[in-house]
Length: 123
Image 1 (tube, helix red, strand yellow):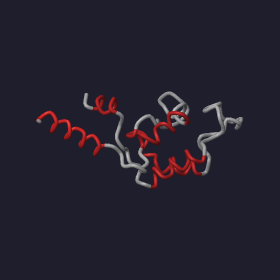
Image 2 (image 1 turned 135 degrees about the horizontal axis):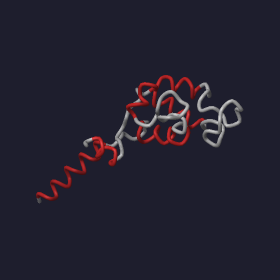
Image 3 (image 1 turned 135 degrees about the vertical axis):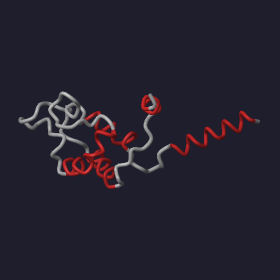
């Protein structure tokens, strides 16, 4: 009986920690876009002036991200001769732009980090 109660408590805690359905969060929705289209330059040692590798390094730039992706200034298009080939395609899709804008408009929530990240932060 104790094992069953413990299992139910763990399940309840895990489900409460999950991000609400329909919400847009950094870890679940934004980070995959950044990894695919931004982190080639937005990382230490590359051309961009700030890294977008973690929530902590990206969150301060949320409003600016909204401005530059909405205006399609970032990421620069592959066909733009003034920039090196960055993503292999011209800019973000409208769906990706919408996700980034909605994330910012909703207060740029972090959401629940993947289990491997949660464990590494405890060290």
